[in-house]
Amino acid sequence: MFKYLIPLTLLATPLVAQEQPFNAPFMASQPCTNFPIVAQIVRDKGEEMLFKGDITQRHISGQIVPAQMVFTTNQDTGTWTLLALFPGDIACLVANGAEFEPWID
Image (cartoon, rainbow, N blue to C red; front, side, top):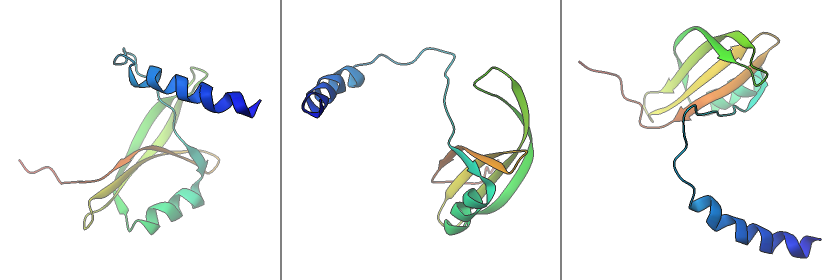
């Protein structure tokens, strides 16, 4: 069985690379785990909370779920993380990146 897996993977790779741009609506998934694990990852990156607020997110079932949003950043390195915090000690990584710069008008 495994001897067919590698050739199948190699055949599928060019198809993925040739896909057309996605159409709206764009659906994405978020990795989630318990809050202490996520908090440690943010601390390890030297990020601190910059701001927080209330948000709503759509669950894969279609249900609208209220949550808290936390934006952390390391202003020395420019890394940032956007988290969604849910009841039951659940934290989801909404997005993260680099080259954070404060808006100057």
